[in-house]
Length: 263
Image 1: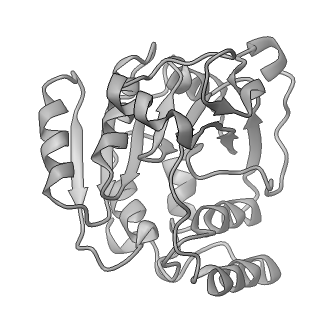
Image 2 (image 1 turned 90 degrees about the vertical axis):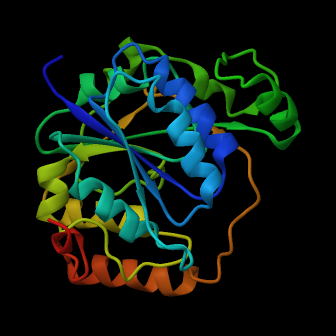
């Protein structure tokens, strides 16, 4: 596999979950060339966790931190991807556990002119005590405490039937997607007008679609397990939806407040 990639992990004040993410990265059958953790203002506990894992990796593990001024994921993602050293970007979240072939699956399907997105299996609230006490990172179809269990099935033959489409899928999730850094720069990355929870990922991908970049769903590949947590404050949703609607209506490609500030 000739493509080299940077794995981007946004996080905020949940080192217990981030540890499981890092443990699952260590189990990858194909490793990324670097890991960049974009920290949106966590306390010292997250920094200490990352430092404790630095020696376990044979690849660079970079921790970028910005002051806590509320949810500024778009800004932190721009800063993280701006310093990425490799041409392909795989983006997850700080509360997901990766199947051992997760990185391999993204890289095997990567092609110019496309972005990729996958699904997630949900780990239920009832399973959290066992999950964190045992530091569980291995799951299968029969594992307890999960739902959407059909999404645990990795069937490469069926996955290969999926075709690229020019459009934005409602199934897109920022916790499981990948794209070329050059395409990210083409649309000027994330729009930093997005603050609070919601739509920053889909709006960025919508601008890629407006630029002619196709999307492909990684069905039966690139499996992740999303750790249950309380819903975030959604007071920003109405404003963020309005920004996304403007991007769609106007066919916007480049964000005004984007990654070019950090390049």
